[in-house]
Image (cartoon, rainbow, N blue to C red; front, top):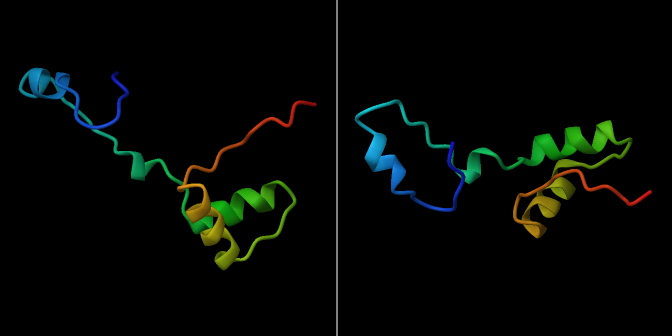
Amino acid sequence: MVCCEGFHPIESLFADKTRVNVIEIRELLFGGDEIVELASTMGLTLDHAEAEQLRRAVGGCISMVPDGS
């Protein structure tokens, strides 16, 4: 497994020797519906407009962050 931004040369080296699956970052980003669902599991209420605003503000990268307690 290789994780990198953009194309990695190993893709072309092994493309004809083994199966290569490329997962692009946009496939890992939360969409508005997923953000609403995540907020709900955290006991928060967001509507879809608020979720989209949050997604745009952080570039779509929503994840759990420990609060230090």
